[in-house]
Length: 89
Image (cartoon, rainbow, N blue to C red; front, side, top):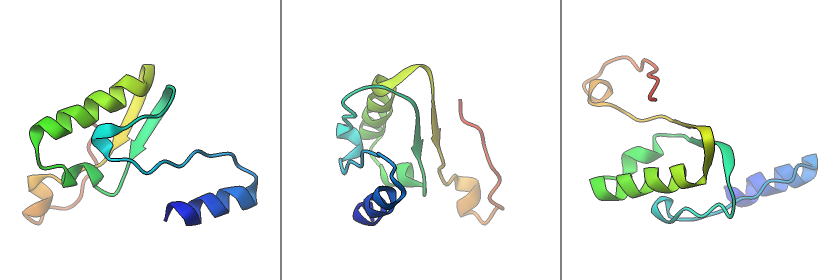
């Protein structure tokens, strides 16, 4: 998927750095204003200490006041509730 995205960006003339890393070892080689984690990726981290490390690593690379946007499935959703958006701050 990263190769396909990289090819599309190259065709569009966009310079984007794509990295494939374990979330708990995230290294962005600099800071960013925002980070996005989609497709319920955080739900795949089942160990609380690993999740804390992921969040610590994201925070490490966010500029002060930066934004981390993510989505997760909640127990409500797993019980058959409608998927309502939540804002986590």
